[in-house]
Length: 477
Figure 1 (cartoon, rainbow, N blue to C red):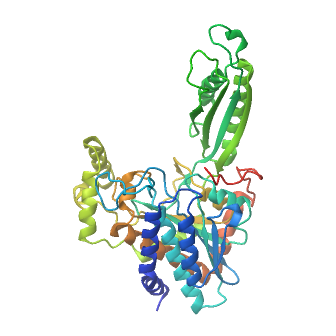
Figure 2 (cartoon, one colour; figure 1 turned 120 degrees about the horizontal axis):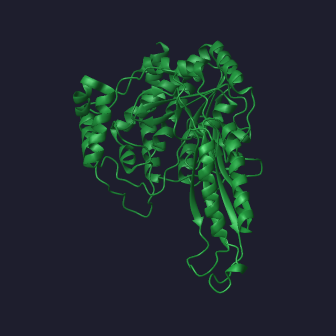
């Protein structure tokens, strides 16, 4: 039996278990740092499967580390499993229909699948290590709260990933591909202004408006946007405007800022300038300003060596094998879950991508082919805490088509795919590809060495966590 056959057989043996875990987590739909039932389920399954499980790592009750084997190399798989607020949806349903019950949340980013797919990979690699003792170690890392952006960042800062030679993960998507793009680093920060209240008509000279300070900060940041790199993004939301009475000078305000840029060091530079703007706004209004870092993420650094290994494994495994029932459901998702304008936009995207094949694809709008591995230096216009993992160990990730073409993440439509056969098949494909890539690393330690050399060349072995020591996970928010 060659290694591909071994992986296909190993995943097949655990397929029912993996699908059950995914579907139960779909039903739990627990948001970041509140994934208690989910973490308990992983602990029960992994301990039963022979892993040594350590729960509550890095100060996070729902984070875990599950280990099997011994020695080098150490291959890690990164699991996510948090849901998103207000995205409850009946699976397989092409109209908006939240699940009955009190929980309004749902897996609009497919993390029920993500975690279970890495579980499939870890179980298959464990089976390999059982037949090849001493070849190395596999670790499944349970990483909570990716959507809030803290889990892996805090794990990286606290040394949880130390000693790991290579890390692999994946994400549900509408395509089968290996990530060659980076992602935006960011910080999330609250600015607070404290002023003095007074009667806005009778004694305005006695007041110092905290709302004026927040508004002047907004003006200053808008001017700052002209003088930062074009790929950077600064966006904000008022969280406290100081009350509802126009005839009272507002004595307090609070505004929440996101600052994003392609590299972490660029974010830090812009962050300092935003602080300067806030200080200027406070001086202009005679108010006091404080700021509080809420969260932060580093940019993702895709490791070329590991990505090429993962791509070879994905090609060897092949794309998801959908059947006619899957294609029929996908066509309904494609046509029935969009407005007329949205449908036209999806059709235009298909025509642009597939040309003469577009009409046939729209009849069966599921990706089965594997996108070519192209290093174009693109930056994904979003953020992920996988970036922080990539700063402390060589990391690669892939996607598989768990959803119909044109389905956006963080939507009820994505949630609706989450427990369908479409999603199950693509999830298992991801698990097989990651497992095969892991075994390839065990069988060729030179690949691990080259991946680490590349990682050292890229990072210098230096990681500056965007969340300072002493700032813990926001467990109760």
